[in-house]
Length: 169
Image (cartoon, rainbow, N blue to C red; front, top):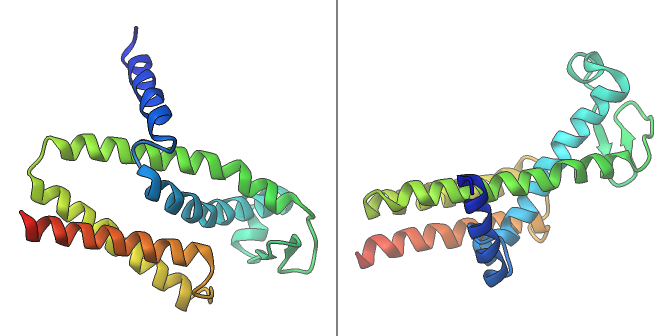
C-alpha cells in the first residue's frame, strides 16, 4: 500500500470519527466554508469574464462581475447563472486545499517547539482578523454578513488560543 493510500485511509477514519474536516476541526471547517466562498467567487468571476470576453476585457477594459446574484457585469451584460456555477467549481478545491494545508502545517509544527505553534496560531488569527476588517471597511460588507463574521470569530478564537497557550505554558 502506498504512502498516499495509507494517508488517505487514516484521514477518512479521522473524518468519520470527527464528522467534519479532521485537520481543520469543527470550527475551522465552518470558517473555511465561509471564507473560501469569498475567494471562490473572486476566482470564478474573474475566470468567467476571461472565458466569455477574453483576457483583454478583464485586464485592460476592467470588466468585472458587478452583481453576483443576478449575473450582471460592469458593462451591463448579463451572464445568467454562470457566476454561481463558476463559484461552485472553485469552492470545493479551495476547501480541500485548506484541509490539506492544515494537515501539512500541523504535522510540520508537531515536531517543533510549542512556541512556534503558538506563534503560527497567533499569526493565522491576526490574518483572519485583518481579512475581516478589510472586508468590512474596503468591500463594504455588513458586520452580520457570514464571511466577515466567520473571519472575525475564527481570528478571535485562534488569537485567544495562541495567547492562552503562551500564558499557561
